[in-house]
Image 1: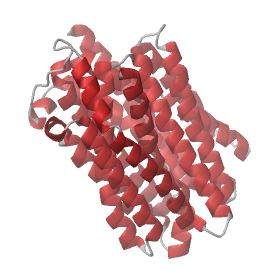
Image 2 (image 1 turned 30 degrees about the vertical axis):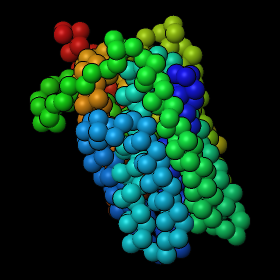
Image 3 (image 1 turned 90 degrees about the horizontal axis):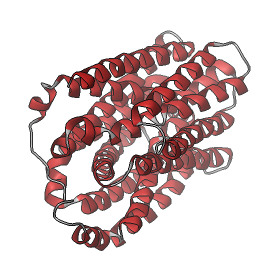
Image 4 (image 1 turned 90 degrees about the vertical axis):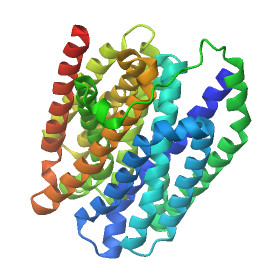
Amino acid sequence: MATLLLIIIYIAFIGLGIPDSLFGTAWPAIYTEFGLPIASASYVTLLISGGTVISSLLSAKIISRFSTGKVTAVSTFLTAAALFGFSCSGNMIWLCLFAIPLGLGAGAIDTALNNYVALHYKAMHMNFLHCFYGIGVSLSPYLMSVSLMGKAGWRGGYRTVFYFQLTIAFIMILALPLWNKVKDAVSAEEQETHSSIGILQLLKMPSVRITGLIFIGSCAIEYTCGIWGSTFLVNTKGVATEFAARMITFYYFGMALGRFLSGILSNKLSGWKLIKIGQSITLTAILILFLPLPSFISGVGLFMVGLGNGPIYPNLIHLTPQNFGKELSQSVMGVQMAASYIGIMLMPPLFGMLAQNISVRLFPYYLLILFGIMVGATYLLVRMLKKQ
């Protein structure tokens, strides 16, 4: 039963990943059609991230009341409806409106399933879980690139992805009885207990604040590459829009591959060791983007960013019960997810402003600053945990 439920959770994470890479891939076509400034993408991404922050912070209470399975099913339907809304949007106002339910649904799924897997499964399964997320974010840019080359355009890409998401949502509904069966099969000693603690009280803990900085840095790198990587390739390297979309698919494939390899290596290496290896690869990849090399090499650099940065998030997530205790894990997980989405909400839009007012060529410099935040916070957290 536990294995079957894990497969269902993997499928849910494919659904979580599907919307995340879609907007950045479609944006060059959207802002051209609507006649918008390039930085207007920030309005949509801010609303999506704001929704995820809210649902993440409220997740502990919501999951405690309605259960992980129900929250996952309803939230997946919410994201599917939002994708359909995007496909029907005729202007920026509608895109912004449908961004809100997309963010609320994504944040609830992310927080609920991450904590469940961290409590009940090994580090290997956490990495594989986020590998399946990588499958979702790799699939949607490819589907969007196919639509962009045809008559359907970016709306057709959103409509195609909507059908995938709707199918996953129905699977989550059918799987609801399975959650109860697994819960009944777990002994009383294995049932997790959650300690309710206020957000302000959590933020008074230095280790929680430092951990939040790591999530901000890592997720900001991930989403800045996902949202602006295509625009960087088009405007700086002269790559065609549809080809740039496929190169971003290559970036997300690197993320999925990094998490898959991390899952295999997790039986031999600790989570912290895997995080350090990932950070080393990420630094090398960012330095490659600085070089005045052909567009193909820049694509390889983006692939390596995904390969190195991808394993950092799931390994740090899986360490949550170990770092903060099982009782506080759900509450801390909500804060960690909120920190992640604060990074996603603020950092990519900030780069959009820099790109519009200065130059898209600042892309690698911006990634290097985000990397410095992540590595500095990692060093401080490791020292803090050793003292504790």
